[in-house]
Amino acid sequence: MDSLKIDGGVPLTGEIAISGAKNAALPLIAAALAGDGALRLRNVPDLVDTRSMEVLLRNHGMEVGREGDLLVMSGAATNFDAPYDLVRKMRASILVLGPLLARYGEARVSLPGGCAIGTRPVDLHIRAMQAFGAIVELADGYIQARAPSGLTGARVVFPMVSVGATENAMIAATLAKGTSELVNVAREPEISDLAECLIAMGAKISGHGNDTIIIEGVDRLGDATHDVIPDRIEAGTFAIAAAITGGDLTLIRARPRHLDSLTEVLKLCGVTVEEGADRIRVAANGAIGSADITTDPFPGFPTDLQAQFMALMCLADGSSRISETVFENRFMHVPELMRMGADIQVDGGIAMVRGRKSLTPAPVMATDLRASVSLVLAALATEGTTRVSRIYHLDRGYADLEDKLGRCGARMKRV
Ligand code: EPZ
Image (cartoon, rainbow, N blue to C red; front, side, top):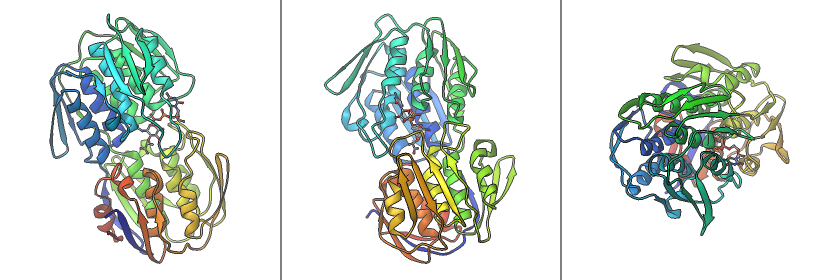
């Protein structure tokens, strides 16, 4: 029951309402552990990954209630262990480290283990906690961290940009004694969303969205209600769906400023992009030009849209050089796209794509969340029936995908 049968070749037209951002919701849910009031999050997407984070918080002893897209978390942690069988399902579980340490002075978090897109270490998370005065040991596959007299504010300089390590350090710093200066931080919209929520809970934060964040420690974080920002990666995925099928989609609740790097390159390829305050219209009618991209932390081209853009370039008029600089193994979609006839050469972190007039249907297999959706995009643009297997990867990051695309003309069925 985990394959998608797709009859492609139909231009997608219509409107899609973009859900709340998975990569904003996960740190926001973890941040509830640092509070001692009630945190109410609205516009939380109903995904396998957000459900996993809810299970993790209940495992720590928190009250977690969900009513539609509202998530209410309250109570206190009574258990500070994040066990391997929960952490291995979702790497973002590491985000409980900072809040548990800051609020309770202890945390025992299983090392996440690798995943499809590389080894993905957590050394930057650990170094940040040590900078705040925590004692951290690695034993039996667990990070064992203690801060018996609480955390102390510090200047933390990140040697490379890390979204998760920035988030862990931000949450930890809100309750540390004194002021913290976080340097060379991630600037993704999800970082700013986390800062706004923490401020609503009582934190004192400035500089988020730039490369240095200043946080003045406070004694406690209290009640707050916060709306999760729309998912820019879901919106970007559907923008590419419009381009690759020669369709016309309007993405409602999308934030144009969160997708500048994608929409700029789509315009370079001859795709029509019209922006409203909270919507983006993307339309194409045939030939797509080719363009080179290099993935980079925000505001650069997002690594989470690299696989989807590669699918588009497989059908572009010309060649495209795609450079993946964020993860060391994020080309797992390449062999699968090649089974559909794509012409791609990989050399290290560079993929050279030669566009073709069309691809051919073939049974393909998903390997990770964004790779799986790139195969769906290629299948939607290809005449005939394509089956994408192991699509449980999709359910981690795309809510109601078949329904959203089906309403715009896509012929896809879960079998
Ligand atoms: C977040 O992962 C996202 N996940 C990822 O989205 C996204 O691809 C990534 O940021 C980059 O934008 C969530 O927000 C839940 P990083 P994260 O720390 O925080 C290395 C998706 O598809 N690194 O910014 O894990 C790391 O190996 C997912 O939605 C260290 O070396 O990413 C990578 O090469 C996939 N040591 C680079 O930094 C560390 O301690 C960037 O990773 C941490 C990271």
